[in-house]
Image 1: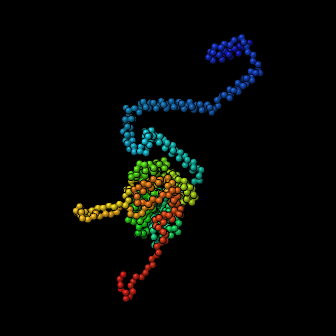
Image 2 (image 1 turned 180 degrees about the vertical axis):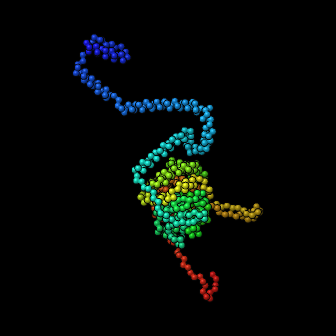
Image 3 (image 1 turned 90 degrees about the vertical axis):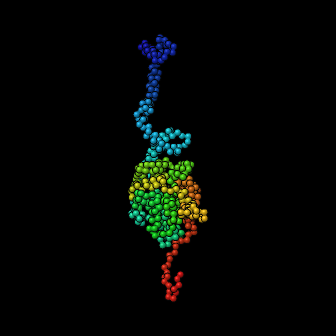
Length: 515
């Protein structure tokens, strides 16, 4: 009877928990359950409870989801409170910040030109801002991860090895020369180096025998503050051109010379064509840069130039133009950190396939590291910031000023009446020498659009397009390329100038004829 009562009470309790389905059980119908069968079912029921019970991981997951929902609701509530009480038009904060925000928005409105036409700046810029933060964080993480994987090589400072020229303002300019000696020079070629480089750059991998075959004296020098050259805080492109002129005079060369500019080193070569054109015979430019903010460019040309660059390089250009002091933290964490790394990572460069293969060569890597070590030997960050600012600031001239033009003018007090009887005096302005440009079509550091722009404003320049070359591949350790460049500039090799034999010009007795 106790079993029956227990069974009935269990059924009643179960029925009380379930909604009334209209089914009633008779109390007088006992159900006999075999003991063995009941024990087996009980054991099965117990094992099912263990299988269905939640694990500790599921409990933590549920707890986190619940807290996430609570925090979301809290955030929505805080947002509503801020919008209803603080961000209203009558609030104190909005009234105080309205004018400064309007001024800042007006100053930064020109940045909207870089956005697609179908994008709302109010929505696009916040997205760009947060994506930039995530990208910088990812780059920093990947850099740290790579530094742990790769072997780290420390920067070494080598003993001084340069020759020096004393400039009129008291500065010393360090230089390095290769090729034929001064008394047998047929062509003098001066090469200013690019950013994060030194006088050791010149023409990478050039053979002395090739220089002697063409009679070339190759002179490279350290820019102010780089290598062993004294700094010049007030320098500009005009003073840079004068440094080249004083260097040529200091090494005893009074005739016209040629200039060679590669990458950002072309900036100083352009300046020599503008400020000392009477001393420059011609120019060879390999992947030359221009000011990326050049006002003469069209919007489409500027877009094509900026498009291949990585985000970090665009940020560096923006900082150099607007907030140059912020560059110091980037430079100290990269090439001034005392450790070596790939040149493209230090300068945030996009490399093409051929350049990627080139810099992986151990010989090229060793050369680049030695050049960088010489560049940063003074340990000062100022010359690098000055060089970066020069690239993106007003140059003081436009490339179109180098175009050869005929300029006619009248002189004298009666020029109005004299013009009726005589022609106006005309002179040629611009750079009268040859300008040769070699541009790799696979170059992503200086895109081919740059050379297209130069060809548009300087129609007299000779442009040599290289279908399969990159930014470094045509100039670095390429004997055939060096021969092509020299042959294009100087024609067939004629060797050095023969030494002039001193002869006695005293007339002999009985011969007083003057010649």
